Figure 1 (cartoon, helix red, strand yellow):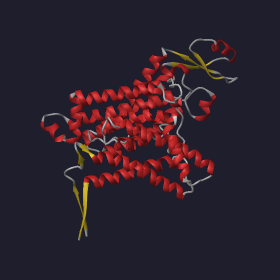
Figure 2: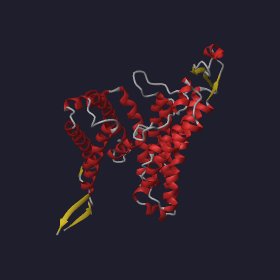
Figure 3: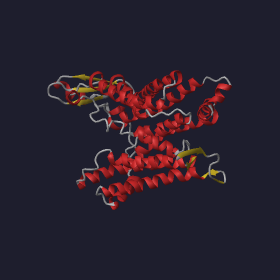
Figure 4: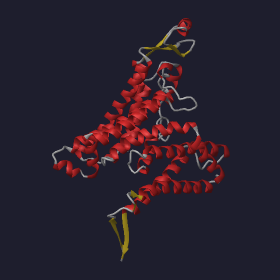
Length: 402
């Protein structure tokens, strides 16, 4: 007995629309939610609670931030995936975006220093000065070195460059040594976590008592923080980053030869070679641009969410909140279509928020079998596994012969 797997020649279409590209993502989400509900029911969570938290997740103001960030990350990964460059390293690229933004915000755009306790009143009334630590022995103040808008711009640009450069490591390995980028980008995430801890604990460690005690940087100066949209946790700067990213990549694909060649790299790399184009530099470009967008998200996490860099004590709960992995689901559900990414970013962001709300509910019920990131990852993993199965059977015919 043997299995014969054959790739389908023609997709199933209704008119000009590939109906499977519409049905598979939606069915994957629906069935994934049902599977998760069943798993939680077996673990002792009532379906009523699950449905309630799912509804709240779709209407929560906090969800809007995840939607915006996942949109940018979805675009970043789609850019690489469309070129058949499988970037699984958005987590590490975000980490380096956070580090670079932290360095700019804490050491270039502002200055932190010890002052005498008797001088605190002087700094309280000083323009551009913020008291970080009111310790009776060694108070710490932060002084602004530049215009806040310029400082915010530099933080984002630093994150873009750092994320792109980190992505170039697996890009070079793939382009010149033919080393699989799935393994290298994934492994580099954990290298980034380790280096992040080293940098935060030693090189960027702050002056305040809390920073010295908990192995973290000082808090970002108030004026350099991203400003939240009233009624939401998302910031104006994050929305702007998403709009610029979407518009720039869309126009690049539609009107430039670079965008065309990146698409051809994914569909027919032999054609690029035939016309004399060095495909290796487009592998480098695809991963650099993908990493750059992920780095911008990392910068926004620092300047708009955490305001500090703190040592990772649990690798399951990094400061990136696992959004780099969650964005893979967004990209696959969108079928690598840039125009559809915001739709599934909204759906996945809502489910992600539902998972966090459900986590709080489960804790209050005293259920110990479902804790921490298990809930969100179960929900997202169920959808991704369902999607993968559907895609296999939609693209291949499987026959059993004796």
